[in-house]
Image (cartoon, rainbow, N blue to C red; front, side, top):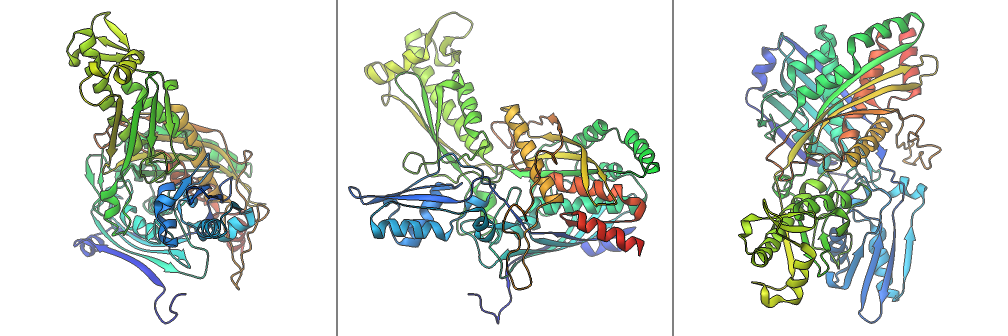
Length: 627
């Protein structure tokens, strides 16, 4: 219980650059926005649940549960129960969605393991959807008050921001209640080039369900803030929303933001231009004018953003957390039959990570992906790792896999060089063979594996073929521009999304189909943020949204065809040249949709600075105009 006599601000961060006041004094325009994002649930398809099994022979408990961070969960459970971690095995099988909600240590798992040890038996627990809405972590309940200084050419000079994040009744483990306000403070500048910045970011405790990361964490809200700011400023200056972004997007890299983040190479302006070209803004404006004559209200909205991804322990250490995640380790071995097993600390939960990691390893060893097996989600069988979150897995776990595959490839080439009487530097691994470059002299890699294990007298060093690698990068920035065309029914307040375009840059696309799937899923959740989903309490603190009859996610009928244009900027910040992509769809979509609604209703002078924009809120705004 919190001490009622003290402030309910439990985390606070602030910064201020020295030239802020001067920038506001010389500004041609000062634009202010007050942004509100209502509370959401990650609402995974599969609610939380677990099965704890006591083993009489070993005195160990095996907990099989729907989680994203099995190693971290084991550590937290062992600490809470005062037991050795060696006495607990955690298994995360195929998980029906997580989106950040399943990163946390929930009390139900503590009770489940305690009971299994106490009663020396097997027990299971699973929540229903009502319990998930009530007690699983919520997200997105934030408010941003922002003042922005622009010069006479509509170029952004400075931002002064006050950020308040409702963090619920208590902090979450291991990410802590600081993740939302501190991420918002650091990343609010987004893709825009300005030098003066002041921010006060606070986490405020309330008597509501705890808050925890949800796909994108604070970035959907901070992007919504910056993109509503840009459209509001464009209207003030009388210029097109594309043009104001064109004048303010970062162009030169590497770039250090006003908050001190270093951005690697990106294509911010290029993705904006690609989205605008795909939409054909001039043609849309003609269609929009014609539709208005018919009593139909179409709108176009843009959203440009950066997505910080794949950052390691140094970035997390800057948040002053007791638990500093970041690195990932892979243990890789080729067996005597020439098949490879890679054991990873990351823990996929439906995003296709096993497939992409297998591709990276296969490319490094000259094998087909079918010969690669990825083992994950079992604390007895995998190295300690941090699980899957924050668009990090392919960048960091993929980097570790690439390093381990390179080391294993060198070991294979060294053995092959003796057998083929050639220098190891002249050996290439292709199509399942070790081959002397430029010749037809080759030997099957499977044959080399057999020799490494069963004729170790012919091999220098340790018998067998095993390597491990750890990767802990500083991080990389993906970027994208989303564009949405909507139609608003002013009689009902209903919003139909007619078209949605994504121009995104996630570096090298290891598997384009999986990337597109990630973008599609993220955009669907972003549309939910913009139009539908809202957790509500009554004045007495009772939850009102207790089922899918009250909490409305979009269905296939509400999500349009999503048109994706890919860019591939290569960056030295990631050894695979791939950048994170998992959260981008959810980050950019809300602002694009709401900006489009505001554009559609511009004849009525209606503005929205909160999400979701529901039919009730649209009708209320229109009634206020009529009054």
